[in-house]
Image (cartoon, rainbow, N blue to C red; front, side, top):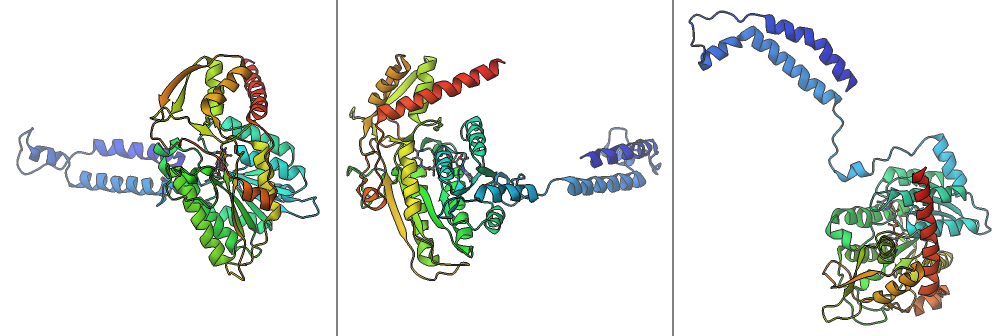
Length: 443
Ligand SMILES: NC(=O)c1ccc[n+]([C@@H]2O[C@H](COP(=O)([O-])OP(=O)(O)OC[C@H]3O[C@@H](n4cnc5c(N)ncnc54)[C@H](O)[C@@H]3O)[C@@H](O)[C@H]2O)c1
């Protein structure tokens, strides 16, 4: 642009000179207002010079305009902050393991709610951890930055980048021979799919495939543990939800992408020998949680004195969720990682059959949303302004309830936090976090 402006400055005298050039006199005098008269004003030499100038301008425009990309979503994954020796050094340091098991884990979505807690827990026990997150603005980036700062203090470096960026992923695998990938990056939330459906395809479908492509091509293929969702049970009315139940009636695009991911995982396991474990999380809550989830925005709105909407079925049926505390989910993730067998392929070639698993990670005790609100009122010591409305058809389901016997048997998964205890911890964190933010902004 600077160059273009300089060129325009240089061109100005030429332009004014051109304006001063007289047009060649014609053989007959045309009427002042006729088209012929106007044509005469742009007589041949002047017209030629203007055309040359015009061509120069077009040329300059093409020379200095940014390159066009065939796919608009590529823009979102042009991350500038990776590469270079300092960056590589940070990746290596972060991946250093001090545990006997020598595990090095790539955690995608590390700046997210679950990714943050899982990364911290892996690091605490001595595993090497490298985070990856694109820090998208689906919700307050301040929360993601806060989680990142805390992880950095404990020695986890989060690479800023998109799981669709193949070059970045390959670079990470060149630097570190990851033994495991804990894949938690996704476009979460069921309702947002009505506003921005393509973000679900970008992160949950294209991103997942891209990640698996890089994993399958690695010389030492990592074992993959990834987050599916209880939402795959969709309109299934059999409760509690068991891994054997049907999952072909998704109620949202989000659920449909997670269901598709389960199929994609099956294909990559089958063709390339990748060891893959899917975890169906049930409404995870806790400190550093996601502001788009009801327990979080109810807390915010109750404190602000704003009315909150409580959904009920069209027949006044109760809406309930199997709220699962973050620490329990983290334990489940770590147990899944510890019991994952190695992938069998290498460099894109299968060398034998590999493990393929799917587990429910829930709490096994659904709580009506009205009860969640009563518990929050008690903890916050504020009465909520409740508005009971019929649940709109926006992707939500009436009821979730996990059968966790498979995870119990094979992973030793055993949730221990009830909603009362978990909410107390969440509220304590919430008040402290937003209070300190308020104080900082008052400075
Ligand atoms: N929290 C729950 O209750 C719940 C329930 C079921 C399933 N899940 C699944 O668990 C996982 C973690 O969920 P969460 O609650 O921590 O969500 P979150 O939104 O807090 O975390 C996801 C992170 O992934 C990142 N991300 C999204 N797209 C990306 C991309 N293309 N490249 C790189 N990073 C990207 C986001 O910036 C975010 O930080 C997700 O897969 C989600 O679908 C969560």
